[in-house]
Length: 291
Image 1 (cartoon, rainbow, N blue to C red):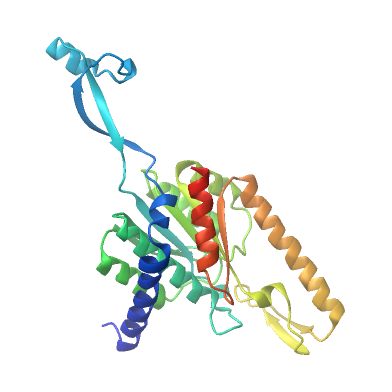
Image 2 (image 1 turned 30 degrees about the vertical axis):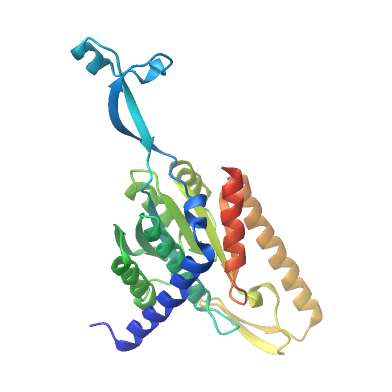
C-alpha cells in the first residue's frame, strides 16, 4: 500500500517537472536525442540512380526485376535511467539532497522521453543492483519510476559503478540512451564505461553539493564518509585547512571532467544549490549543434 505522503510527493514532482517539460524544455529532448538507427521499411522497384548497395537480391531473384530495400529512421528509443542510491546521495546543505536532485532530473528526462514516444526504464544501484524496472511507455509508468526512486531503501552502503555499467552492458541488447546520475565517488570503472559508451548513447550526470567543494567556517566539525562510516574531526575555522580542502576538491573534479572528456562521454554537472534548467538546456543545445 502506497502512503498518502508518497503519493503527494509523486504528484508534486509530476506537476513541477511536467510543467518544465511542456513550457521550457519543449522539443529540446527530441532534438538532442534523435534516433540515429535505421530500420527496414519495405522493398520497391529499383529506379535509375538508386544505391545498388540497397538491392534486395532475394526479391530480385524471385521476381526477375531489381528491387531495393527502403529504410527509415528508427524514431522510437529507449531511455535507461541508472541512479546511484548509495548513502552519499543523502547529503545536502541547502534544503535539497543530492538524491532529491537526482529524482527531479530523472523525472524531467522521463516525462520528456514519453512525450517523445520513447520507453523509459530504471536501474537503482549501490555496489550491487538494488532494483530494475524494465522500459515502458506512458505516464503511469513514469509515476511508478518516481515512486521507486522515492521509496527504495538501499540494502548496501557502497558504490560500484563498474558493476552497474557491466549490468547495463549485459541487459541492453539494442542501442539505448543510458543516463548515469551519481556523485561518482568511486574508481576503477573506466573499462566498463568505455564499453557502455560504445554500445549506447551514454550521458553522465554529476550530482554535487557546494559544501563538498568548499568547507563552511563552523569550527570543529565531525566529517563522516557515508559509505565507509569513517569519521574525522576537522577544524573548519582554519583557513589553511579550508584552502587545502578546496584545492584537493578542485583537482578531484578536474580529474573527473578530464576522465569523461578522454572517453568522449557527455556530462551534465548539477549542484543542489542551483537550478538544473540552465545546465540541462546548455547540454541539449550542445548536442543539437554537434549533430
